[in-house]
Length: 73
Picture 1: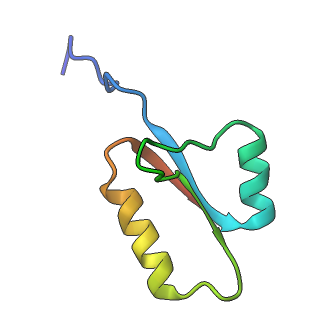
Picture 2: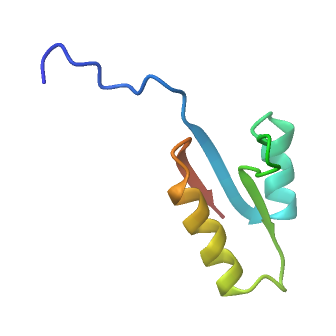
């Protein structure tokens, strides 16, 4: 639509779901955020991480209006 700003008024953040070394690399770039409730925008997986845990994390990120991109490695 002409004249309408296509960009959101709030800044969206990126979340990362990956192994420890990948998440650590993203955290070193300054990507990591934690809100007042302690919720983070990153999740470190391991061999013991279950499908149910991953599904809960992904669904939580999808439901969060502040997250614009979910990076899964």
